[in-house]
Length: 599
Ligand code: SF4
Image 1 (cartoon, protein in one colour):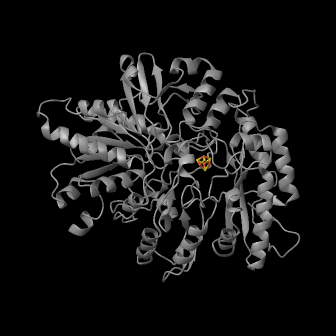
Image 2 (cartoon, rainbow, N blue to C red; image 1 turned 90 degrees about the horizontal axis):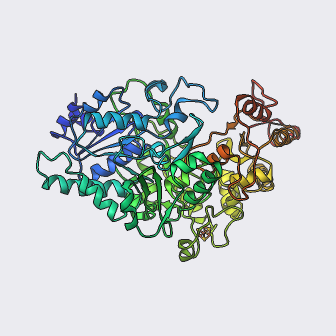
């Protein structure tokens, strides 16, 4: 096999290590997804980042047994475990807890290649095979289980993953900085360690712990907790498991520690062991964002796969322009994972990536998305950043848009225009969800978006029509969605575009009663709207909505709320959103007065 191909990706085999003349790895990553060399995939992103910083990194993707972890030999420094783009339970089961047969992040879209609770399974494999190495976890599944949490699949409150598995440490957030710090400190320790000391790495973890380094989760003995300054001691696991009101209160405290400039260290005891969550990492700079996204990703699946990995098809012509989200929706864990402060790349870095993309063999002239977790937060931040550093609001947009938020989208408009003028780029679409309350603060952006960047359908998520439920979700009033619809239709008509909004609604959200769902159903009927897709609510770890679901308590007012539980009641709410389920589509122009709309 050609040397060039063997060195194109990070190694997944000894043959590829030999081609790079590597006798051993420094770091082994274990991934729940198949290996796709694209920055939308967390493990390849971290692996490329560490490779660029001089470390020899390899990947074992979707191991089926502990022995599979030996494919690349024993690494020098640590084993990093991430279960993939999506939590393994969400990947493996439907909202009704039925096993899925497919998996878009596996070769050929085949299901069954990742175990349930993959993080814990992989950590056990790693500890069995490499007992003398630190096992480090990260990514959405592992890091969002960092404290005691409600587990929808087992329908009970379960302990922190760190208290309940062989992980030695968890890095939370996007974790580039933590991984590099850890790799460098372990590298120093290894160089100075005696060859037969199996605990050579423990002092490094201990030092990070004593320095209270940001973005980590440690296990600590009870007597050491007194050394930590600026801490919040949460109710213990035993207490939150016993009492729903205590669980609700603990979730509110912990989720409010989201601002890295004023967050405190969180401590939660699990019997005599303290789980210590240090404050979130500081936002990374534009230069650091550029360095990460400019890394030499091939944007292809590893050559060893014979069949396509469907998850790559969705993102291969898309460009990530920022990370982080200040929306703070109560059902979404993205703010907890990527941070509340938006971190954006420079225009130059993004435009260079687009130019490289236009040269690839699969580029058809269409960029499928230019976005981030939310479509329209590029370069947006508070006008007075000192005020933001002192802020405790979980959302900059709810209950209303903060007066300190600068809603000027002009840098995004300029970026879209510059990107559109690049040779071979025919169209740029916005596929990420648009936060319409924010977009409506900038008419220029709305005109640019609606008249030029909608590929027939624009995904928008009003989520519900009832104001109380929207409040629990931390979403804008439904009247704002109606106002946005009118603007969308007006601009589309002026631009002579036949295009549609695809509204997303959630069924079975806490607080949502069958009567409220009936009102949505009537509204959809009145608007002649026939939804093709609805989202059945899944309570995800580390979200306030999961606490509402489990406790049936509004965490702010402390009042009891209705929650649709059980398959029948959940199915009923879903069916109410699809009362006019149809099998074939009818698409009519906005110019036609009587229209059927498909969402
Ligand atoms: S001050 Fe306003 S803009 Fe700044 S973080 Fe707080 S809510 Fe967001």
